[in-house]
Image (cartoon, rainbow, N blue to C red; front, top):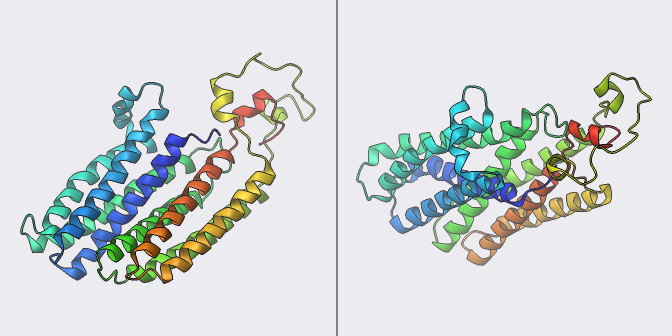
Length: 307
């Protein structure tokens, strides 16, 4: 599949935003009414800013972005529609949570329930994003059980890295997040290793023969088009295996660096910011590979021998 940069930015930016939003919602009850309204407001603005920027960038990949709102009407059958609905429903709870936790609206008893709802809605939204790809049976690399967990842990790890960076900048105790951050990095590395091993070992039994029902010896005699069409541009992208191996190694190296830096990030703003930057870069590399390694069965029609 074509690794569209607008979609890559959407999944990485919104993932970090939802991860940060979820962690803020989960940690707020233990801290009570915030002693630093500026920290809360800046954190909420960054989280919602990343989410909004990501959601808007996702529409750039559409032929008619102005019609994106119509996708919301298919929530009964479409994970894409459910993602949009979940994203919209998260906003009012997140705004109410930010206002009460910062003290701009004095309602200390509402902090815990609003924080919990915000965290739940954030995880639901990321879950629906992962399900968009995991539900596509036509792309073997995506249609498997580890796709959604990888999305969830990427959101959590990038959100935790951003939480650590903000805590260090404002000289605040990150609490349990200082432990959660490197643990999520380790879990993410393990999940991604298992994911890549699974898609590498998967049986590639989809061929031109069984796709057309003409038997195992069918071959393409002539290309269907003289120039590349939309389907070929969007679904016919192929990444060389040697490049994929290098990018996978780079991904694990970046995660290692980020995890080590997070262990040193407590009250060290520059180190914490660097850890988040490396985590975000690792997410970008992984997401590019995620799309590039996805082979759509339609490519059988254009000469791909098997998928």
